[in-house]
Length: 212
Image 1 (spheres, rainbow, N blue to C red):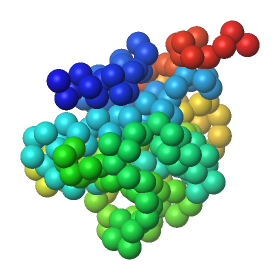
Image 2 (cartoon, rainbow, N blue to C red):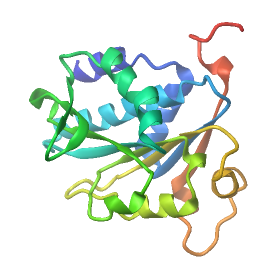
Image 3 (cartoon, rainbow, N blue to C red):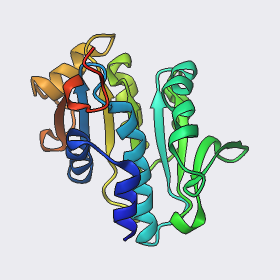
Image 4 (cartoon, helix red, strand yellow):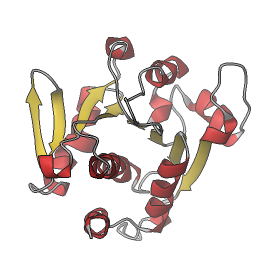
């Protein structure tokens, strides 16, 4: 019943549901393509879903990270949406000395934490730990940022720690993202090819888009 109610809350359309399944099975799922495909929304809900699932397994106060390239983008793309999308029964959005700006799930859901962070200087997270990470607009970041985040994804007792992404083509990271997820050209130091999967996003996938 809890899973059903969570599904009703997320209300994913078909392509978003496919992405959630890839989050369960792959370390590095990327949801990419044209604008309007519902990528940002499903990234934040995928983190909620993971936290609730872990909470049901007895993992409490697990921290995950939702990252954008800078704070204004984080605010416009996620913080304002969280205020309207996430019901009060789910948790609370706020800022604390211990967790910084974050959305904290209610204790009955495991008390998990979605840390809301920007990537203006990824090195400041060098000593942090996140059970999972979502990077919105992956191509707006250099490869070094991705590698730095790979080094901080871990959590005691949780063995599947995905780094999921949403992205449009272009921007400074276009070449390295295309190399791994589209062309599937791998070199020493790259992730395991079996862990990398790409799901193409189209505006027509999103039933909430108008014809225009």
